[in-house]
Image (cartoon, rainbow, N blue to C red; front, side, top):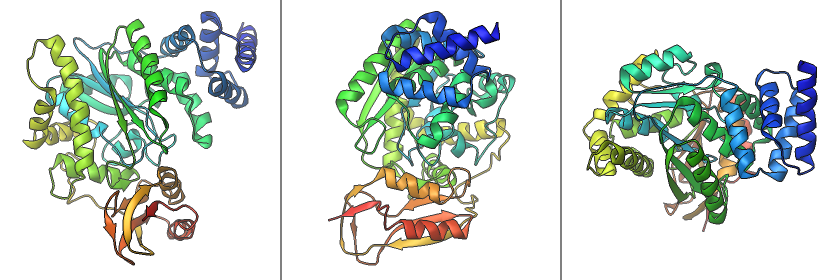
Length: 417
């Protein structure tokens, strides 16, 4: 029987490579074979290539999402279950770790299942892992969400949409995902976790995954149709993204930015705070409308953040996930070698190249080296003097640090005018 299923899966990949449509049965068997490790990495790579080349019809998107959900675990929580996701591609923007405690502190369940890095130097799971355990079991996720209202967990051992994690591992060396694959991956996890209300962050920019607003509109319509079919209420935030919202790039440095915001430190990255509040506000508005609460979502999110309630809730989540609930930006230590890069001339920062930023952070060892990364001293529209510090490189490996210094010439992060 397994040989027969494998044959159907292989023929389905062949059909898709030729641009033909797949049936619900073909898609389910293909996802089931991948989920149970019965399809080789080579064949899985061909499937990934087919999805990038041809894309999917609305029915195929639905069938793929449903098959990913049906071949793994599903969660069921009572009442409203909020969730947030970003199509990603932008480093140094860990809004999730600020949004989750805000939503949970507002009394709404938010079981956030996050991935590790695919195209950036740190996924949300990589960053959260600096502060707490993210490798949770299904029982732990349920217990933590019921107890403190939210979690930030890694998907791998939860067996949620298991085919997706296998596909991600194939995609990772190529550092790309097709739009349709992103849509399926996101929605499958939302359906499996039992989300009822969802905000989707769609960053747009020439060094983002989505480069043009017309592409963002197409992605939004596909998400909207899938959400309708799975009975999930959805709201979008399409935003032009020209640089990281924070200053840190890499797991520990991004975690530090999150702590600065939650602790309301004077040196916190205000763009990261503003984006997190905007997204949390939209998600609260969506939930409040079904709860009969007549409050401004963003005003409530700001109150929860500024009065320390979000920080208290974050520490509860960290403790529930076996981390140090007394962690602070003051006690947090970066165990790295550091190198400072200075500006070759005077001028104004005109552009930040996100691709090169990601590449350099990976050269430094991120995300595997949790303390590797880049701290942006200067950001867009800021002036810099000749020989003034532009950024700092961090790495646990001094040889990687040297390699990044040499590579900086060929991977310029800043355009100065």
